[in-house]
Length: 440
Image (cartoon, rainbow, N blue to C red; front, side):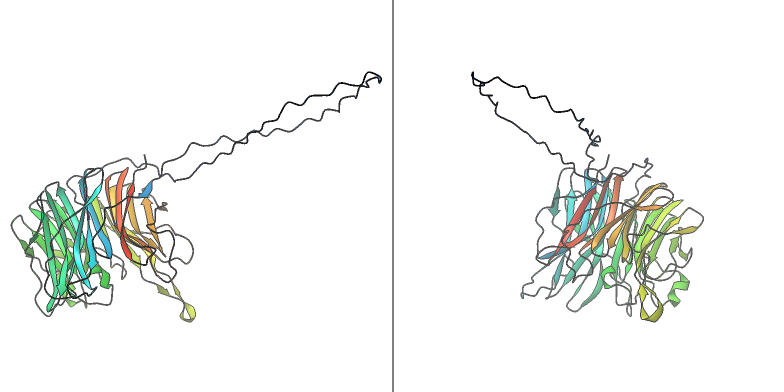
């Protein structure tokens, strides 16, 4: 989730697709032939020239100039461990972008189940791995993962996630960047019997107003129940805020995303039920019920331009068949939510949105996956269109459901956009994926 320090109002830039141009040139040469002299005792005869037959000429069609590649994989530095994933990207400008996630490594006992926080920074010319702490370091099989990042300024950023392992349950994890290092900041947890206290998203209005939400970790998927975790940073400490009274009766109210527009206008969405809205003093239910698995990401440019994206679950058909899951989106115009159908990425394909960034009312981007490849679509003010995107590994493994996936997207401007996620390499290991859109 990206930070809204100022609203973006940028003209939509037309998309462009990468293509290559080839040209072929044939070069011919011949030696000069000499005609022997005719014998003097014979009279030379003159052979009439052959009749002239016009030869048709073909004028080649003008070759269009090459177009730049809009989405391309960006080189990354070596990442620790044997597997890694990026979950979120955010920035304060073109020279200050953060991406967060986790990497897996062998623990002291030689076990492969340990996960560690991972943070990468873009300084305007290259990405670098920046050390980040773990909240849980005791025992084997510990897990420390980051799911969200919000950047306020080069010396002010927040990353959130969770830690678990050993005898510890799922505990919230918040870290702050002060311009020099990442430091863990104490954060509250819901009391038992709530079992999951994972933070999935963070959004900032100012240094003194930051919101984080969660519940069940995103990667555990649906079917796991937990109460919503909603907390606010006031510049001094994190404080839990109660979920809407109606949501207490739900089997689960776990949340996946939050976007903070103003101190009295904050939205949060999850896997089940209706969106939550903060009015400055309490959370309320506002808007229609979203389909299960729907809401994975939120973003805004203003209170009248808020996007929510995700995926609708498979729909049962006749004789036990089912229609595949499909990417879904909705926009809030300040008065009501309107559902919009993303462009179909082929027939019988499984598609899902996992990240969204709003640039203007007529320009938004959503990312995710289609079958085993990355998926990028753009909103032009009227409809969604599929935009070509890059894959970390274009050689797909049919044994895996997803080979390339984008989890988050952030726009510095209409022509400078970042997307992050993961892919499976040729050795069947999970690697981080970073792509950039720089179409002029």
